[in-house]
Image (cartoon, rainbow over all chains, first blue to last red; front, side, top):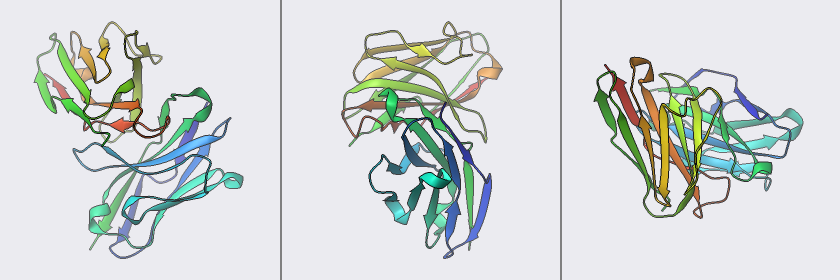
Length: 115
Length: 117
């Protein structure tokens, strides 16, 4: 079974400093991995996705993530946090072997950005 | 493109009544739709997967007679919570997969907050 572990339930940063949200995955097959962001009372928005192409994936709003098979990690980073980045972030794994897969969500990391 | 809407965004009902939530793909045909629920400060849990014109596949532990799913067309799926109880209060989110994006990409609706009194 596929799973993801988000190592931090909360991450606090100051505006303008780097962001690191950690995610480790477990998958029997070559995984597809995603990061989604959820702002309060809004729908989930896809930040970026990895589907076995380039290991460094660039997403929207300056976010990027690197797929490291040897470490089974897919950490999300951003060089400089903005106040608008404060939200809940979900690391998600999908099994490419099953076509329409189920998406399995991590428990989420709440990013807090202080002025 | 690839917009998914949900209606209503918020609903309050009395215990014992039924509530219907609609999920629509606005600009693409959704061959598969998914329903999730999210409890406060928790992650999304998949409830069921539905393909147009066929019965939904429910995840283990989800009562199919309580959470009725209908996927009557390529742009509409409905979730009906029957005989709702306060423990059914949650945030319900749908997503859709289709020709928009890749086969692994799901597009999410904004969610429906259900409160059962």
